[in-house]
Image (cartoon, rainbow, N blue to C red; front, side, top):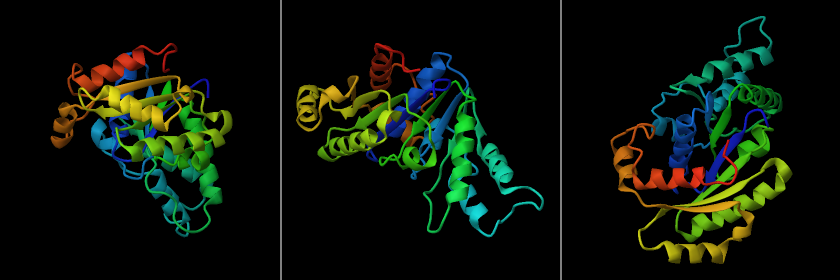
Length: 260
């Protein structure tokens, strides 16, 4: 969607992709890219807490409520109109951005009508924002099933472990099956111990074809992130001179083409 670029942060759970999604949102806000929509598409639903957002309804919850014998649908309101109203109500307003949680995956049974309506409404919703940042589940199910939205930039995230790098390779294969819907691929290796940069890059080259990526970054291990998360502090409020955020913003700002 050219009118509202989408930035998707993907990777194995536990590699820090939610942190990088928050960093991405923060950098766009600092560059006055507003209004922004942040979508938490990971079932673990961690993005809200690191952004300091209180979440109410989720898309998954709306789907279940609607399927349960039309539970809660007022008489005389078409189901499609009701679904669109519920999605709009699920959007949480924050300072400079809005937030939406996808919630849990679909349960058993047929959701064809509900999923189609939600997909269409989400596509319309995102067009009203300057850009959308998505914290993704590793399998990209939300991109292949829940929305038709193209991805302008995919930030593939790993830490210095074999499993995380293999997950990136799997995500690349899934992205290829989505044809041209993923326009740019960026690789970020997160939580790199000081002094281990050369060894980490060697391991990355052994497992990934770096030619598949527009750019590659290594983000240092940073105790400030641990302290912020331990204290429940929003990553939108931490100091900007911490090593991880400084390295990440330098990476984004150094791209040949702007992220958004």
